[in-house]
Length: 324
Image (cartoon, rainbow, N blue to C red; front, side, top):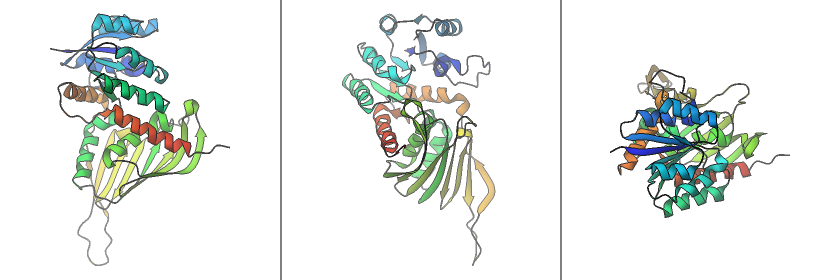
């Protein structure tokens, strides 16, 4: 039996990012990932834009709808992807929960621009026994999973200091890396603003700040998206150095030398270990994890509850910024 999927919102992350890429190794959208997965059947899409609906129908040979209620009644889906603009997320979830067939919702981040709306989304799904996940793609990349294993086993030991470079706003993109660090290190213990940076739309910011976790200290520095996109993490551990570069496309570990004698300084070894990532198939990584979830297995996906706590952390940071 294949699980029936409905996609609500047919923009770039739904169908656009890999629509004209004939390389089947590139799987960056919900539509392509579910269409290619043996356990799922892509049954339909919903969007108010006629051009988007036609692109979906022409490329995935499934019906499209302008009305979410109509799509839910016709398709009776097991899983619904919410990839509409953030301001519509709560309303979409309120409609979806009326339909008992839905077992899982995968929502684009953030859940909401408002904590109370995010709380309501989590509450509604919990009350109606629907599993809610948020599409933080890096959590389920093989390189990130390997790094978590190394941190848990102390191959990457503590204390750790590090730097994160991000662009295009704290809510929009910085959130990916805060979620990633929480996934690796656990709850944030404290946060401090270094530089307010500039204020963006929808309450977003480009601030520099410091986050402290247990035995881990990380500085976030914002770059200007209008210059170029830039996403990297560097961790310095007693055991060596981790570089999470190019947004995670290149991940490198350098061990520390262990044979220094006398006053000889310990150094990083020239031999670098490349930790294999799979970001060219990031959405398939997510769908593989959803397949585990729907079969009752554990996953590394970000739950609604975890996304809610992340939102609280982010808004707590933003509240500390004082613009003149």
